Amino acid sequence: MNRDLGDFQTPIPLAEKILSRLSADGRAWTRALEPTCGRGNFIQALLRMPAPPQEIVGLEIQQGHIASARTLIGTNQETHVDIRLANIFETDLQQELHWRSSGPLLVVGNPPWVTNSELGSLGSANLPIKRNIKLLDGFDAITGASNFDICEYIWITLLKELAAQDPTIALLCKTSVARNVISFCRQTALPVRHARIFRIDAMEWFKAAADACLFAVDIGSGSVCYDIEVYQTLEDSTPATSIGFRRDLLVADLSLYHSVEFMEGYCPYVWRQGIKHDAASVVELQQGVDGVFCNALGEKVDIESEFIFPLVKSSDLNGNSGDRPRRWLIVPQRRLHEGTSGLKVTAPKLWAYLDTHKEVFESRKSSIYKNAPEFSYFGLGEYSFAEFKVAVSGLYKEARFRVLGPRDNRPVVLDDTCYFLSFNSLEEASIVADILNSTLVKDFLKATAFPDSKRPITKRLLQRIDLYAVAARSNIALPPERTGQMALR
Image 1: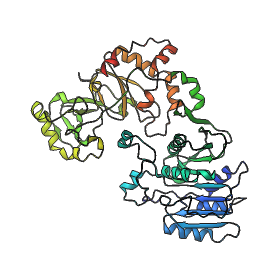
Image 2: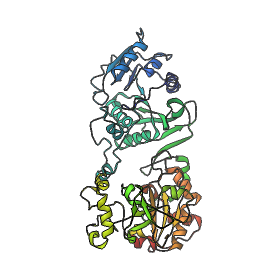
Image 3: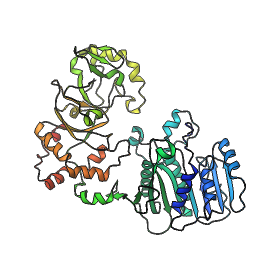
Image 4: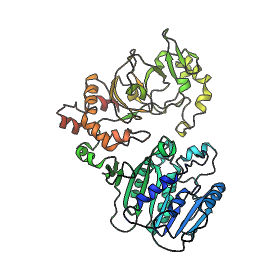
């Protein structure tokens, strides 16, 4: 793989399997476009089809790849092949391709599998112009949702510029990209007639650890459908499941969702995300058997004890950590945006420690810390210090809800990879945890969550679970919502 450009060259046998699958229903295309053609493997496979296109256009940004492609493909008497030096991000696909005919169009290929931020960190020039192409609101754009795969940008470009030609677009990509693309199609009312995901073993074909697929979309007149049939392999004739929108939300398994849709609603409790600090080397501590705290830099830390709290992270929630905390967290604030300058007087040892490591805090890149008080955290409030919590990791494929109580007479805090509900009583926390760990809720999460996501479990997803509906179906008496959580909002 060329790390700078984020490309994987597609093996010709895989390209041939893909084209065979796409044409299995007898369809043929007179035109084909490969928007990032690399060394021309897809073009070679197109030329070997029983009914190859009459003309093929390949776009490629690397001159060396173009030379290789032209040499390998040679001259073809039946198909006009045009491989040109062009950047898909700068090409007007409606005006600059100069097709000789107007027959059915197939767009096929394997665009880069990296994000815009990854390429930017490498200093790559292979980047689109910075635009809010996903129409994100301001908060999502700030907190990272705008970090999209380059492949996703290419998908959207192809859909927007070629939709009027009723194309079939079939690209190798991550399954997460496929979901984002179908969401964009629905959001912008693009006329999708048929969408399919065929899972690909990325390790076998590319030696890459990624949840990958061939995503194929037919655009054009006719009935519009934003459901996606999901096939486990290119060879399968029957989809294993279907992804689709219900109640304006994308769900992972339409069949399973039908049986648990009754709990779709709004959680009577408020889910919170753990504390975000981005300064682990300084503020996350370990305690030796002698009771002395040390940071990740190997320094002994002597500060006012009331600012040190037992810390639980995702690995703790899904592991079998004992009662003794593995980590502790320095928390200089009790609520969001609370000023910290007063610590100079109320906690001089803490202030001196933080000030000694000021450069760590000043080097934090997230814009959420901009114009905030010195040494600020994000995602904390009175709820962060509740005595009892029910918590779950956002990072694991299978949710495990755990009750957390005080440790060493201190309330437990969580990091920002976790989500939690806060309570005043152990009894209420335990009842809610039992409901959340029920088979019904597990089936709901299985039907709605996507295990290949960076965070399969999210606050937005958890907030959709109507716990009263689950409790009623399970004959469990859930305490009135005025207790516990409501008091901690």
